[in-house]
Amino acid sequence: MKHSDDRILTTHVGSLARSHELLDAMGARANGGFDEGRFQALVDDAVADVVARQVASGIDVVTDGEQGKLGFLQYLSERLAGYETREGRLPVPPSWQLEIDMFPEYYAQYMQKYSAGSGPTTSNVMVCVGPVTYQGHEAVQRDIARLKAAIADQDVVGAFLPAACPMGFGLNEYYPTEDEYMEAVAEALREEYLAIVESGLILQVDDPWLIELLMEDPSVAPDERRARAQTHVELINHALRGIAPDRVRLHTCYGLNHGPRLHDVAFADVVDLMLQINAGAYSFEVGNPRHQHEWRIWETTKLPDGKIIMPGFLCHAHNFVEHPQLIADGIVTYAGLVGRENVIASADCGFSSRAIYTPEVHPTVVWAKLEALSEGARLATERLW
Image (cartoon, rainbow, N blue to C red):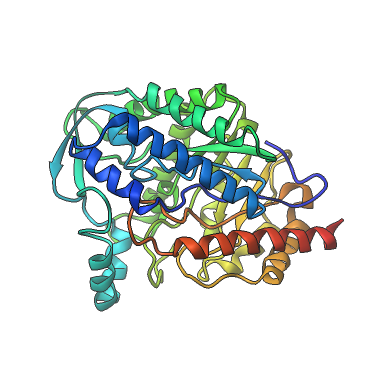
């Protein structure tokens, strides 16, 4: 993982919108009605296309856009054994419920838009009914091979593959305790982490769970929430044991609730825990208007030596295209606090964390946002070097 040694580098968080053709194929495949070879060829083409478009937009550290995945977490339904699928939905997280109670009319509209018919498959609940093991070896090797093929003739600084963190994936009906359940998930996911790192690509661990554990929840005391978050950090580090931190980037965010967000935990209450995770770079939200002011925490929080931050200067929840000069101002601000070589310009979160037909940011707007990020990095470079 390279630092911004002679200019500000650019990247993003990972997921990009899938074409409607690919979404239709995902739906048909889930019902057993689509040729597997044809599906994989569609994903090959999709990855090649989004990599080329990232490069054309000026992105230095690229990824596969998660084109073949149903979502940043949902893809695990194909890669972890020990589960069965049942109709229904997981309970709404407490942090969401507080917002729903405050803005019921908004969330009635929001839930309608992103529920039935928004994606290629039906939302179901995964239930753990046996030992959790990793069965995605062939799938992750396909991800690796197609991303390497896509960057082979492109001028990129680096490439990464996202993978889910150990988190509450489905309901547990097998392990005696949640701790034992999560340890099993962590051990299984470690196999995916090792495959990505051993391939020479950068591993990105997607971790919205750290912030979710710290979010306001009237049923859990603040000290208990922090204790749970600390346990979560230790679990990730256990899954990453033996992996060089400079092969890992950690992404944490405020999740997929694109609403008013009046109950968000302050990032100041997150940052020390985030920095305990054994990664070489840390991605977090800045473009989100509820958190733009939090650059000030780096006045008192020391970035450990050799580490990189990847602030998100693009909001993933609205279709405004951020002005390059605003992005440049943000980059210069963070560079002044942690050192210009330790800043890579990024986005808040993925632009289609779920494979759906109507992502929050229109796919055509995403490319304009990434171009603005690259231009902002160029302007900041002129001021910093």
